[in-house]
Image (cartoon, rainbow, N blue to C red; front, side):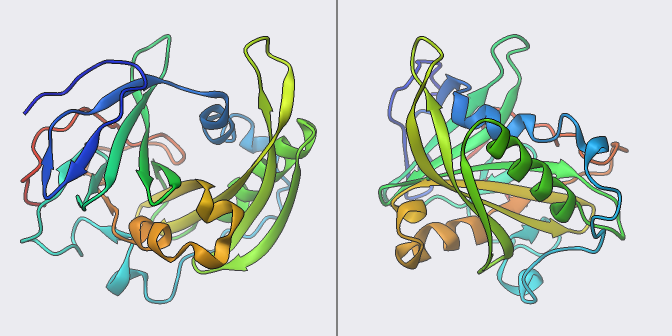
Length: 239
């Protein structure tokens, strides 16, 4: 099994076999999701701290590693494990300076899902607080955002400014920001493409988000720290 470092190559993950994994520099769209944690202390202190997750999360995902089906083949990316399927393309987003993996991109059915796992407190959640921060950042950048009740609970549906090669705003693109608070972790997702432009046709990408397994581990971590991600160790790893 080979893992390439070619920028913007298309990589297919199907039938539990990853022939090659694309490693790409972060894009402006990805940076929006990453930078949303930068100034969380500025978020209104009255933001709710209860967990935000579907009532059936433990049964139907996103799963904690202790809840997942042990016999299913997963691509092991460290902080998350992804279940391969026909037509799924996997990208790792890499921070240009540090070269650390900061996000996992999943391209499927004309849509893109970016996921990031974060450490979280055991008894309280992060999504209410982080959601407010993301909305504020998008509006400051000149985008539009509305909060709706989605399949995972509260989510943001936005028109996000897109920068061209000169760094100037060149239109907007539709994006959905979703989040789920789990046991000692928070999983954030950013949906683009067809599933963001037509949420009524987003069942496949939403099911893909549900299939993600978060591996929190036992190492102490401050809340909101990114759970480490890495190149795949094995496409047949047991959880």
